Length: 509
Image (cartoon, rainbow, N blue to C red; front, top):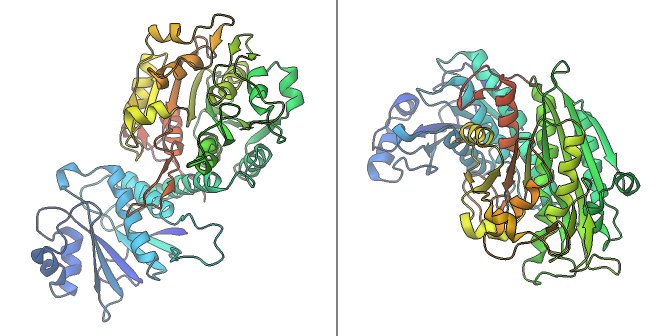
C-alpha cells in the first residue's frame, strides 16, 4: 500500500471513498460538516436517526455518485475529549478494512481538527497499512481480501511537511508491524530457526544493517548450553541472529532488543495438550518483533546504537531432547536445573541476554510469549513489564502509554528468587504455578547482571483469537511499536519523546 499526502479540499478530492470522522455527541461538525453540505445533509440525517452516534470505530457508508468522491464513509472516533493517538490508527484501519473488503482501491482520509499534524498522520498511516494483512496467506482463493492500494491523507489546514513527516514514519512502522505478523503467521514447516535467520538477513540487508547469524558450533564454543539444550530434541539446528544498527558511532551507549524465536513449541518431553498446539507457531512472536523493529529502525535512522538478538530453536520431544532433571550451563556459567521442558523460552533467552551484554549493551529490553501465567494475570488486554531498574521501566511505560500496545508493570520481589532456587544447581527453570510470570522474569534477571533491563511478557497480546474492525485476527505485531518508539525516545529524535511531541523522524519507504 502507498500512503500519500494531498492539499485537496475534502469536498473536491477525487477518490473511491472519502473517510470523515464523527465524534460522539450527536452533531456533525468540522470536516464532516463541510462534506455534508455537498451531500445535502445526509450525514446529519444519519446521525439524527441514530444509525451512527460517533462511538469508536462505528461506520456508516453513503454513496455520492455525483461527487468527485464516489462514497463517504463516516467513522466514529468516540468522545472528542478522550481522543487518543492510537484511536486514530484504529480510525484509519477500520476505514481500510471496511472499504478494502468492498472493492475500494483508493481512499482519502480526513484529519480531525485539533490534533498534532505529524503524530496524527503517523498513526493514521500506520493503522491504514496494518489493516491490509489477513490470515489467508495459504489459501488458493482469497476470502474478501483488502484490495485498497492507495490511501491519501488530506492535510487540510495543517502544515503539509509535518503531515508528510508523519506519513513517512507511520508507513515504515505499519510495514514493520505487518512484517512481524506475516512471520508469526507462517507455519513452523516454513519458519524454522534457519528460516527466521534468513528473514533477519533479508530485512537487515534492506535496512542497511549488519547481520551475523551464529550457528550451533559457534554457540557451543561460546558456552551457550542453555540455548543449545532446548534445540537437542529437533533435527532443525538452532540459530542466534544478531542485527546491528550504528546510529551514533561516537557513543558508547547501545540498547539491545532481544526476542524469543521459538519457531515451534510442543513442550518437549513435558508435552503440551494437543488442543490448540498449532498456535505454538506463534511462539516466535518476540523474535519476529525484534527483526521487524530493527528493519524499521534502519529505515528511520534514529541517533542511537541498537542491536537486535533473536535466539531461535524448536522445542520437540526427540531422542536427544533435554529431560526434566537435566542440568544446563548458560553462557555466564550459571547452572540450570530443568524442572519442566515446557519452560524453554527463558532458556534460549538466557544465553541471548548474556551475549547482548558481551556485545556492549548498556540497556536491554526483551520480549517473549513467555508464560500462560501472564495471560491469567492480565488477559489479552495488556503485556506484562518487569524490570531491575525503576527509572528505565517508568520511562518506558510513559513513552509507550498511547501507541496501540498496552503494558502493565509486574513486580520482581526478592521472594521470587527463592522459588527458582535449585537444590542441585544455581537455578530452576520454573518456580511452579504461583507468580509464574514474575518467577520467569526473575529467572531472566540472573543473566543481565546490573545492566538496566526490561522484560516484556507478550503471551496474551502477541496474537488474538478474534477479528476487530481495524485488524485481522491472529498476530498483532506486538511489541514492534514499543521497540521502535522507545528507541526513538532514547535517541531523543522521535515524534514521541518521553511521551511528548518531539522532532519528527523521516524515512524513505
